Length: 126
Image (cartoon, rainbow, N blue to C red; front, side):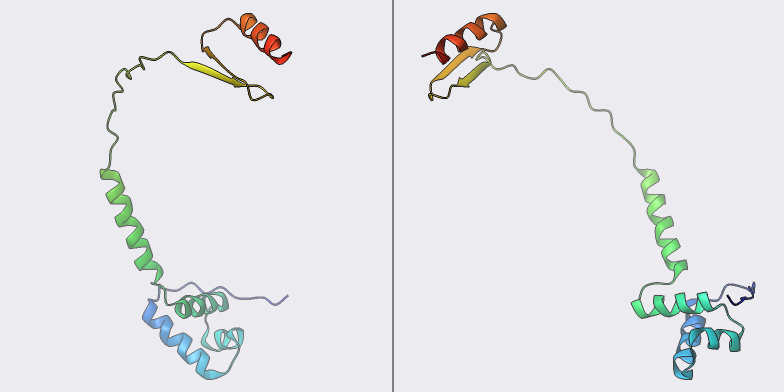
């Protein structure tokens, strides 16, 4: 594994990197070779090459866009919603049971469970 030296320097803008990437491509050198010759980070050179190939905005522009979106979001607030009583249907709730013989049985939803079981067993025997 080769050792890479890390150079800390001021932030270079997209135009500076665009020019560097163009010189790199014109040089015919690998990214690692060009970065060593120019005293640049190979990872940064590679990342900027990828970023510029995609034609996307520079990171600073992306950060500004996200910041604007966050500022707009902070202005939003929740509004309380009061739910009134829903209108009840005039017709009672009905349960419909379809037996294997295609016989349909309709009973009120509030029917007693044991009574319902008796009805279903009786009709199932028919």
